[in-house]
Length: 294
Ligand SMILES: [Fe+2]
Image (tube, rainbow, N blue to C red; front, top):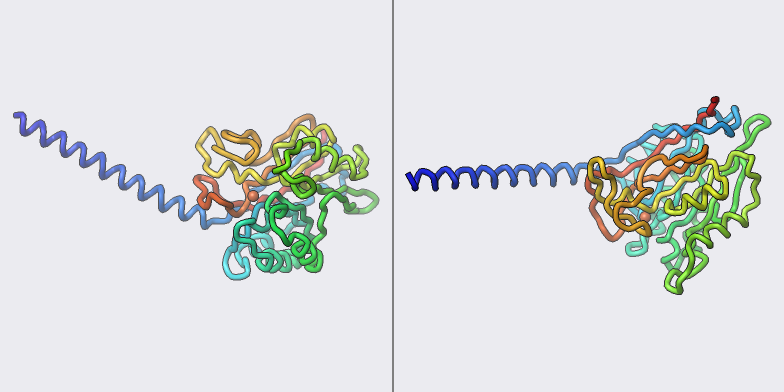
C-alpha cells in the first residue's frame, strides 16, 4: 500500500516536471519568434485643433532602432514602412546604440526611408553617448533627413499648416554625470523654439517621462520612445522596467491623452544592454490624425 502511494506521488511529480518543461519550451519558442517579428500598429489621434486639410494625415513612427537590422539592408523594416504609405516618417532617437555603434547601418536605413516619405529625426540618449554624433548628423542630413534637434518646420496643405518640432535628448546639451535637471532642460529646449500655441503642433522628443512638460507647453501631439515598452510586459500590468521611470513605468506604450493633448509612446524596434524582449513585439506605429468634432 505504502509502495503504491509512493509510486503515484512519483508519477504526479514526473507529470508536473514534464508539463513545466513543455511550458518552458513553448515560452522560449514564442519569445524567440516575437523578438524576430516586426509589427505595424495603428493609433488614431483625435484633436479639435487639427486643420481639416490634415484629416487622415499619416505618420509612421520609428523609434529606438539601436542599430538593429531587419533583413539585408533593413529590407523588412523598409517594406513595412512602404506598405504603411505614410505622409511623413518620424524617427524619435536611439537610431544607433552606444555599445555597438554603426553609423553605416543607420545611414543605410534612412537612405531607403527618405525614398518612402520625408523623414524627421531627433536624437536620443544613445546618440549623446557616442563620440562621433556630428558624423551621424551630417550623414542623416546628406541622406535627406530633416534633423529637428531644437528646431521646427511647417507642413502646409492648402491655406493651412501644422508644425513639426523636435528637441534633442537633454543629455546632448548637459552631461548627465555632472548632475542635471532633466525636466528644466527639456522645458528650456522647447521654450527656445518659437511656435504659436494655437497652431497644431507635433513634437518629437525621445523621452516620454516628460509628458507633464509637453502638456504645460501645450503640445498637441508628442511622439516618444526610450521606454522600450518596459522590456518585459506582463498581461494586465504592462511594462516592468524603463529607463528614467524605474519599475512599472507609467508611460511605456501607446496613446496617452489629457485635455486634448496627446503623447504616443513607441515600444521601439531594437534593444540596448538587455537583448531580449518578453511579450513585447518590436513595433512601428502608424499614427493617423483625425479632426475631433464635438
Ligand atoms: Fe532606446
